[in-house]
Image (tube, rainbow, N blue to C red):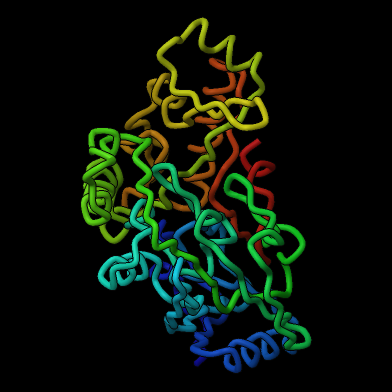
Length: 345
């Protein structure tokens, strides 16, 4: 199905009120290919979009927004694990709920993350100590130019912190159509963050982890259906040990997480909060009053408002801590994705 000259306000959780030349909705691989080829034939730029939960529209998009709505969940199991084959268009939180209801734990730390399944491996989404790479078995994608399908095993996805091969080698001309998940039957709770630390690892249930995660997210993060936002706007910066040591000398209470390679991950929200920016506004955009890592649309923000606010935050943090924050959100210009760091530099 294809619509012309449509608003994308309802298609991005930031609720930026702009338009695309066309919007196409694909419910299967054939429709996905047909819409892609039609846009290509018209020499239009194409933006593949899932739930629109990690994008910022900077302007009107002069091409086709192609919505992947391929659904379906297939389950296979062996003695050690459940294997889920999930359509890229399934809503992520619905998958988490479904797996839990079916007695298949392992996704509960990732509850209430907005977006669709197909976007999860691209960003290697994560929360409360768990990332998609820990449960991903494979990713199926299609070359939109020739229709060939490829299955990449977890190891070939090159997962990193909010990163994957899909942001680089398979960035243009490919579409994720399904994701495979492996949920071990020997469940190991991850209780390393926030209120999860209060739970007893010997008696805790997957449902208790799920409920705790949902409570924490609802208390700290605005509901995108009410207040436009894209969740965490900036990545948590990973710095070398010397930089971290210098910050900790002056701020011993700073949250910090040693990494396997010797570097240190810092909490971007804490750094922003130390600059006293909670509630800070620019135009229709603001820093959320409860979570400094979240930028919100107060109802009439433009992409330019969000960009100006992000640039100010980045400069403040750099001046105070000598750390340059990088956006986690993808920036979408008139003809497609643009370099987010370059835009706010």
